[in-house]
Length: 159
Image 1: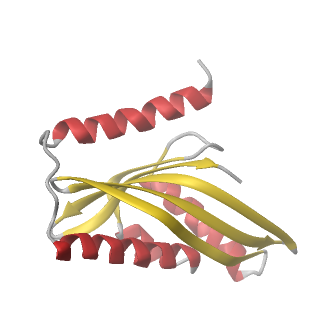
Image 2: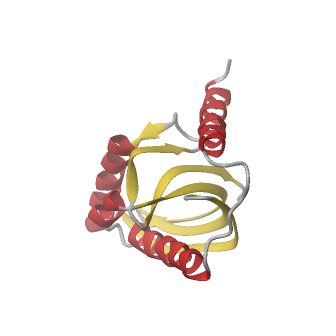
């Protein structure tokens, strides 16, 4: 079986596990809860754009799973290590994040779980070369002690 198939199977197994652990009905949260989720996502995206590693680390669950098309699924520690490397590239000028924009957002709630889909457009300059990419993303957010934390991530490149 191809490595990419295993990545997709792992990610969707995670989603299925989360969904099965929730009640079968979709409970719409209060307007304040939904607003807090969107504010948290905006804060997360800004922290990623600005390479605020400590903030990002605090905003993901301990058992966080991150999957994309260019690597195997990774855990929280591996992703945080990637963030530190990325931060060094930003600090030394090898990487400039020109834009990181989320649009076409949708959300489905399952009690204390939210599955968010969106389109992400990224513009970076790496070592003087402009790179522009687009991705479709799926994020799994869980509410822990009244706060939303990202528990899972998957993207697929569209541009």
